Structures are given as C-alpha cells and as structure tokens.
Image 1 (cartoon, rainbow, N blue to C red):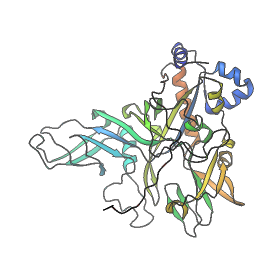
Image 2 (image 1 turned 90 degrees about the vertical axis):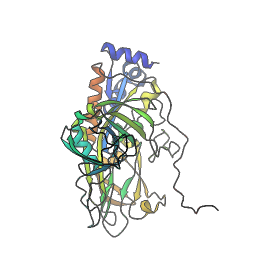
Image 3 (image 1 turned 90 degrees about the horizontal axis):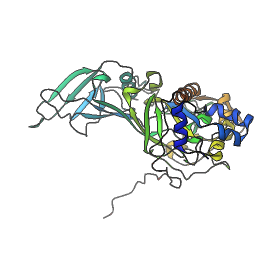
Image 4 (image 1 turned 120 degrees about the vertical axis):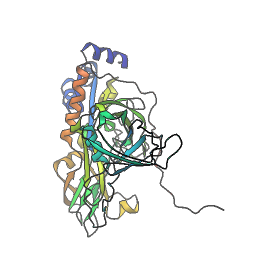
Length: 396
C-alpha cells in the first residue's frame, strides 16, 4: 500500500502521521484497520533496560612517541586491546580492577564497563592507563593520561545483542535467596522479576521481522544508528501464539551508533547485587506502515504477549529447559502474578516509562523531518534455533 520512499517523502515534507506503539492500539480501535493504515505512516517502538551484550570501540589517536597498547584500562576498567595500536573495545559487563566481585557474597559491583560508558556519554573526564612491550614502530611502553569523549577520534557503540524479542520471568524455587542478572530472587517463589517493555518493544511489534532487519535505522540512546547484523543468540524458530508472538526469547538485534551523539539520560550504568555490572539503554525503532498486516501487528497488547516463567534456582543455571508456565505482560505490569495457583509479587528491571519517553522522542524527530527510515538490506533469520555449547572430548 505504501513504500519506504513515499513515507520518507511525507517525513521530509512534514506531513507524516506518526504514533507510538502505545497510541496506535486505541487509534486503530477508533478508526478501523483499513482507515488507520491509510492515514498512519510510522509507528514508533522502544525499550529501556539492561542490555549486557553491549560495548564500544574507542580510538585514542597517537601519542608522541607512539604506543601499541597491549594492556589498557579506563578508570581502572580493563579494555580489550587485541585490535590496532590505539583502538580498544570496552565491554559493558567488565569489572573494575581489584573489584572483590563475589569474594564476599553478595558483591556490590559499584563500577564497571557500563558505568564508564555512562560517564563517557555524560562528558566526564576519565583516566587512560596503558602498557606495551614496545616495538621499533611503537617504542613507548607506558602511558597515563586523561580524556573526555570529545578528545577521542571515534567512540562507536557496537552492541552484539540488544532488544530481546521476549524474555523470561525469573523466579526462585530454591530455599535460599539468589542473586542473578534478573535481580534478587527470594526463596520459595516469594517474588519474580521480568525485563521487557511488552507492547512497546520493537520486535514484539514486528514478530516476523517484516520491517526490522539488517540496515534498519534505529534511535540508539539518541544517536541515529542501525542494525548491523542479527544479534547473538537470535533464534527465530520458537513457539509462537496464533498471532505470531514468540512465547520466549526469539529475535535479537546487533546495533551500532556514534556515542558522541547520544543522550546521557538514556545511557545508564547498572550495578546488580551479587551478579555484576551492565548497561541500560533507551532504544527506539520505527516501523513503517507499508500495509494493513504490518499495522495490525503493531496493535499487539500486553495481554496478548506471553512470557515464560523459569526457575533461576535450578532450571536456568542447569539449563534444563523447563518452563513452569506462562503469564502475560498485562499481569506482569499489575505487579502480581499467579504461578501454579500461588500469588507472587513481581518487579521489572526495565522501565516502561522510559521506553515510552524514548518512543515519543523518536516520534518527535520523525515528525520534525530529522529522522528518515531505511529499508533493510537483508532480513533476520526466521527458521534458526539457538545451539547449546556441547562439552566433548577431543577426537583422536
């Protein structure tokens, strides 16, 4: 019914009709699917929450004399130096040097890679310390200096796995408190945690990856970035509801963008008691209304999305694959769920409020003509499954 070019022409002329995934549900109810598909050009989706598989590539430029960094730390957080001389990769979950981790369980994990990324985007002055074995072309063996993000030649966020399509509801069947990347879980099912924006979440509004694919333009923490690959652990071949909504993790996205263009309020370092550190991001993705079917999928409601309840006391760590049952996001957002007849308090590691703010910020940019859409250059896989790591002996 519409093409990317037609929608972009309307964006450029300031005539595009843009609604968030939160708004579109009521709009289609009022107008009807056919009429709404004619009127609406773009639906903006978003999420905000911890995304552990995130990080950034930094280029420091060359000192006098030059150094090929073989070991390096930013604010005492180890960065990966197995790249060119002054390129490093900083991972969101890397701990600060000498952090006691879980030596005195549960560890506090006050500062790590995600916090360095937050401080970089916020424009703070950070310390670089690097060592080298020295070469003829890179003779310097040690350097200590201070820098801000503006001193860097490039600061590029390169995230292998963001925007999980759906995710577990974590619960604890054991008789002791446990500390996980899904937060603190009390024994004997006294609480549960989840992490998703539900009906706002990008891939839940495009369950079959019809518009989101490699090359799709995204709003990554305020910067204009794109999907550069399917995310790690992407698995399109999962159980789905009759409407096509995955009943488990399913799709993921690998994203990249320029950190110098990011907004500090949607880039946050995260400390997870007893587990480690992470990075919370606000990510918005526009869905072009190319036809009625695509629009219909963006009308998915929290009550239509089922999330698997998984025991993190035994089943998750032992990788048994057992699912206790499913609950929908309307139940999750109410703050209480029923698990096999038991009433359980539930909390969220993600923020629906911040996700909605992100969706609205993206919508405002599109309406202003500052953000145009990009047609994917390749589709995400729909039939692949995630393979486990098999422990085996070396064959003779």
